[in-house]
Image (cartoon, rainbow, N blue to C red):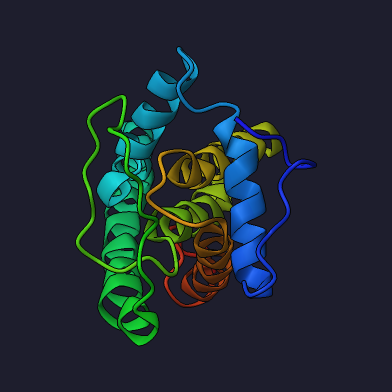
Length: 190
């Protein structure tokens, strides 16, 4: 393994490529270690298809009918977000995913879509914005913290470049704000 200080980025790389390379080198020091790999691979799998966010919404939905309706609304928003990200946005960028030669230490679903922006990151932020609507401050911190972990897990497992994740986080925050304004999980009482 090389440290960040020892590696000079190639001068012909773009600023984004150099950023991705530096972040990837940072993650190299954690790859191949247990239990880190096991935890990170589990987080990335929980992010597949927004599973963790749907599970959290439905657990919350057990509290009341209003929370149950909110869980269904979240599923609808996340389905729409997936169509926007995977069906529209990614087709405009067509960025290739990172290429790795060595085998992965744990099972991993390899997406068929292109790389930019990260759908896991976008979904995490959309869910965070919406689930935060009726949450305490500690719960909001936990939601966005978990979202951040799911997002960076994509860099660790080398399914996304760091800039894909950053783009997904930004797009997800924007889509989450739009969804909260147009289709909030909880309707405002009049």
